[in-house]
Length: 532
Figure 1 (cartoon, rainbow, N blue to C red):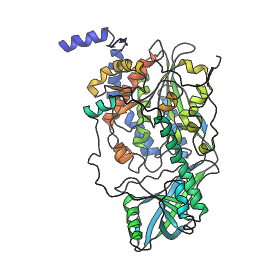
Figure 2 (figure 1 turned 45 degrees about the vertical axis):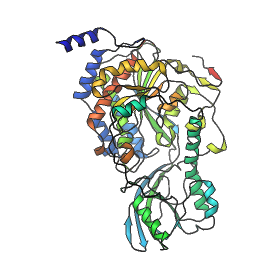
Figure 3 (figure 1 turned 90 degrees about the horizontal axis):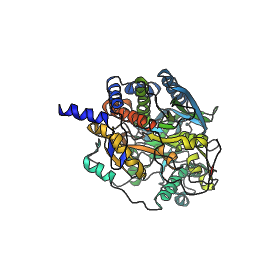
């Protein structure tokens, strides 16, 4: 009886946290939970994206198929104005076949995958291997004149360490408390991270160009993980800057064995047979968008998003078919229970995230702000995000004032444990109120700390509320991320149902507010405001 009385009191009065009196509609929460747990389609969506369509590398036919399928599915569920919004990208690419052997000092097949945006071998390519580890342009002078006709191993081999015990991780109270404890920022942290990312991505181009100039016939990278997990991501998709020589990602164990043999004085030879296809007819790629319209002529805008693209070696399940399925399921739930939001609820399923937030950045530039491009020569290999990052003057478009919040999911298929408030103190009590009905599902942490590596950053960078949820890691970082085992069978239904329900509730409550969510101060620099 006591629990029934408590529930009745909660339904009659808004939840409050601290000085904030933030309404939480527990009747809607009940309906969201019922629909999300008992009639879920989240795994159906994920299964189609992964088992049926498969990897969705930006610029490929599979990515466009995913765009069109998600557009049709959102329309089928009753969302309005489902559409594709394009952005200039570059060349599409698929790796179609690979066979790699060590032929000396003994013949054995090697586990390898083609590096994305590298050409095929045009038949079997054979050659002697040289180990020439290079981590920056400063290393080039050491190997100049020594690589002609060679298959070049470009990665080092770290000293042997025991593997970590924790492969599959659930957040415990201690780790959540650590996440919640605020990390006082160093003023240079963001700039150092940005500069490091620029150097990292630029080096893919610089290294391959150096090897081609030196007459190397192929490059080989060591996969960063053991247990035959292979990561084969490369970035040379820009028109006119595609790689000229074949490249492969080789399993850690096979790479290390070859290096040991060379260090012992053995001659190592390999054969490579790689087929790859480049797609050049349309250098644009696309994001999928759709709306649950808000009320009135000029309603506010609340967005949920996840990136639809993936790398090619797996099926893009945890990264980030899971996030796409959750976002789609969240709006399906809201349509199924018949909500009529005050603000428009908009879905953004982004293309080009893996190469640098292309789709979400283009959305911000098309709808919310305009800002000049940074034409610094050091950014010539970089995506639009880096070239527009912190550029002023920034002109605010009319939709900027109507924009309330963006919620993102992109850290694997683990359930939601809370949300990063991105140093926006004013939203903390609001989010705590919204999470209170989900404490029984393990979601209650709100931290003022920031997180990176997801599409929410492009909204936060222009002064708009953009947020990423805290998730259970599971085996996202230890096994799945950018590897060939990122498949449907390594995602978890209970987690994705939980995340869908919480995402739906956050969208609903944000869209029913009379005011936008609180904002941080606008970024420093010159601002102008566009007329309506």
